[in-house]
Picture 1: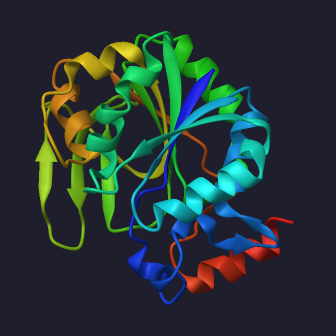
Picture 2: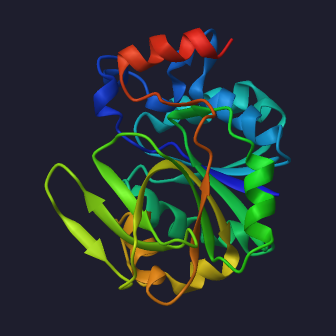
Length: 238
């Protein structure tokens, strides 16, 4: 199975490390976030990867080469001219998945104990274009799901902004974990161009297509976006 790791971000929350290094190479107990996630995907049968790069791209490329991809077959999607965000980055890399029915996408800056194999199996047993990993945790922005756990909207609880794409009730807010399982068909339905977020893609498609959730509340999930979260991750990931 193939996958993609988003590693092009500027990592502004992780300064001062990201003044001189890419976020994906931040280290937890001797291993970079990138290595940990390459090996996490390997443990669930995802051995072929495309990784997008922008901020200190040369460091990521050199590290992958020096470590022979940690045993995975890794292709680079070069965004050094302009970072394309998650949606634009996936669209640029879409060619890589031409021979796959389903593929996995994840952010480089999360660490989790979630059972990805179970998520993949749930996705494959459904008619969903995509399945999004979520938990019931406090954050500022939420996806909104109906009783069948299908996407119906989005909400920012700090600003009050809300986008409802299907008029259904009740709605349940879940926090996105940065892991997706996507059916190849979705790539041909992306209408946006240039730099854009996958959040916008999912909200556009959810009005007429099934975008499901996979709730892994209770499993370990750390967003390693700040120096203090690196310290927290070191306590849980050996």
